[in-house]
Length: 164
Image 1 (cartoon, one colour):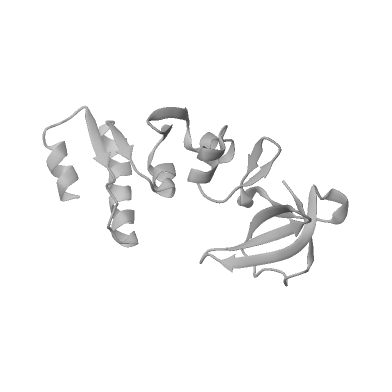
Image 2: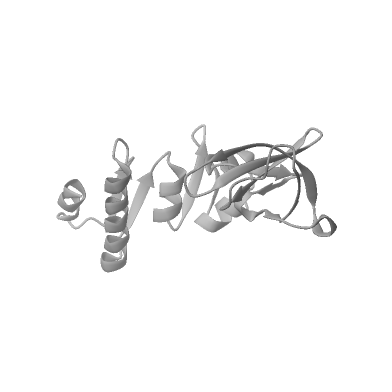
């Protein structure tokens, strides 16, 4: 925060933040992120935030440019790029996703449903604990879908019906 405060002493119109959270623990990252949000609201200045950490980008930025091999691949607001990316590269940058045709569906957008309302059905193939939730992989033949749950996962082999 000291380095950011020193940079702001010059009253810049634009602040460049290149990987500002690298090598920091989560608590310090959170404090600096809160500080940046407060500065943006209070002072109304803009900053360019360069990062490879997608959750940080989603939380801090209101406009994102996705670059691949030195070229802008797509751009937009965080919600649009996260939930409706146009490119698989973008979908992958922001974490787990399911591909259905040309559409990318986030695991958090899937819900367990009844067979009658299901858009995808399969058996639980794998799962993992992420701290705040579990990811559950459901497989039907060669197709797989991953969904997130706040509850412990069903047993491996259990039939699950999903909708989005």
